[in-house]
Length: 258
Length: 125
Image (spheres, chains in turn red, blue):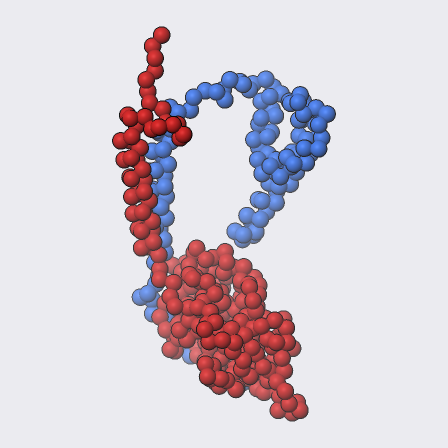
């Protein structure tokens, strides 16, 4: 009977002589290929930018007026060292939750908001603390508590290109907070009423970030969810509310870019 | 129905069919094809999660054992002969899929200039 002398690898035995060179070469080649492959894939990814939670600023407490669009904006009337009076902040709760339900009773009223700031360039968002610690009426006899939000300034109808993101991850809750890899997270945030933000290919009236609402002023239209995180062009009316631009998007005009 | 709803619907129907298969197999089928399982019941609920996921394989195996078309020696046939081809195929697939994915990836429209189509219709109050 002929004996089969083909070397056979068994992990807990000494490596057969004939297999040593092959195993060593295959091991080195595998590690080298994976390293190069990883570096190549990494080099194709976009820079996540400098958006971040600003825990280093500490807890921020400001007074301001709520404007529900329906996503709430806070027009700051009494700021602090970091957030100046006159600035406009988007608001969110912890996790993937917005604060539309919490702010609905405060429309046009002077409130005190407290939380952590998220910052990316000129895009600012305040993640509110829970309950009354995060949002409460400003103290006073009530007569000076009713404020009119700043007058909105219509800027006309535009056709713009870019990407619909969720405002919280984009502002710094996630890195990266945009792009296809982030689409599922973005849609969950948007379903949770986090304010959507359109990132424009080029600045419009000085900013590339626009809060997005439906063309009739309602929340983000359902038709937009399929296009979140894709590069698209669309039309819509743009208005300035405080120092934030609001895009009233026309979902019928969406075109996916090549 | 958008993409997410379609995925949810497919998952839902898959699990519903899996539930029906699990009920039939654990009540009727398992006794017919596995004599060691006869009279043993406590372990059967433990199989439910697995059957929910791989119910087509459960049905195929049930059918092949019932019909006698299953060759019990087939599981001992050596598979090493195919390793080289499969390894090469996986390498080509990984590189190919990655390359195709990168080549069809959208490009950020950095050159797209926002166009103002019309002036505001009326001043906001």
